[in-house]
Image (tube, rainbow over all chains, first blue to last red; front, side):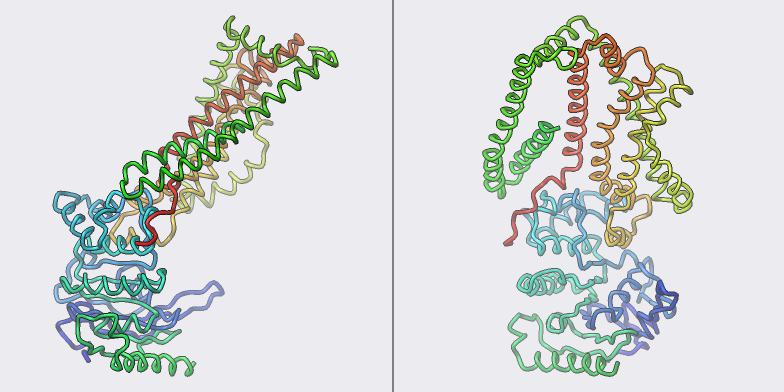
Length: 262
Length: 297
């Protein structure tokens, strides 16, 4: 297991803590002393019960929230990290007045960088996401799964090195969800970006990840990091293997023991 | 108003058809639903028209049968005659133009100032804290009660009418615009911020388009209120305009002419409202499109 002394990290979190002020004047500790080192091309799942600060963790890495203490370091070349990050949210959050193609082009439009190359990239993404016929449609003409694929495509548009995914399939039905997970692995396999994938489905976390980060609720601490040594490419049938079951059980026990300790 | 909402609904249908046309996969289903809708709607309009005509006939019959004095209630045919006469000798047209001018200028001022105020209030906390309570307070004043004062301050010319119109149309617009600029989901703002959007870009790419449906809801209310505002201001003191004409014809007991002016006023209201609705449907196209479609994929 890598420690924070590794030098080949892409993201390193050192003792991240986050305190929120509450309305009654107190504070809530969302994160407590979280340290983690993520290698290039790694697929990390983060599981934990609601309110364990897993979303807060992604938001801090993205720069949408500011940690109370601790440090986020991007490596090995820590320059203009915003461009290295792409974020996918729980909701597709597409702009309803923009077509699918224009939603994909959100990021280049904000940076006044829309040119022939970005258009070609958008076409490429439409094919990769299986949406080539839907480029000129509006989001409300798409199903939930298709909308979320556009959301993923939008985050991939500027070719980030790191993809942050905050329960991206949480709003989808079970069947769509499985399919989307496999689609995500297929896309990930093409250029092996570093992925931080937050979910509260343990099987989903195990099916996708190289390592599963297990978090405890209030305050959000790292309970353990579980290696998933299953071969790739992964298939849905993997779920029925004993190895898979063992890892899921291990994570479940970790969560249960943390739960009863509170 | 009745025919108006119908037209409104029909407009949506007209919009839905070309949209279906641009997306070949969807075309059969959306045109099929459009046909179904049309079939259901046509009898609806026909019924309202029939009921309306029936009421006119009843009105005519009652006035004739009971020999009601035409100083109290004129027959529909007398109103129609007065309408034709009024347009032939140019009275109705010249006065309509005066009132329309007051409405349009006043409405324009209201739209401009309400949008600017809404942007300032939603973008700057201090402006909100200082201005918003005052605005709520002034909103409780019945605006028509201000009309006499405005006549005293600005004379019986066009400016007092324009200001009355602007005042009466301003508040519903402002409230809706504020709601609109605040309607963008926090998550959407964060999404844009995650792509490095500046505050101005969030405004341009998210808050303004999200506000449009609310702004148009406000415009629909405000445009009708504008007509009321102009007429009330003309009642209070004027030498021309449709409001003046109503008072003048009442004074000479020409009740048929009063009715004729009311018909013209409601026609003006319906026409202005229809323009706003059409513009809204065209600009805010994304809320009009049906949410069905490719669910299975």
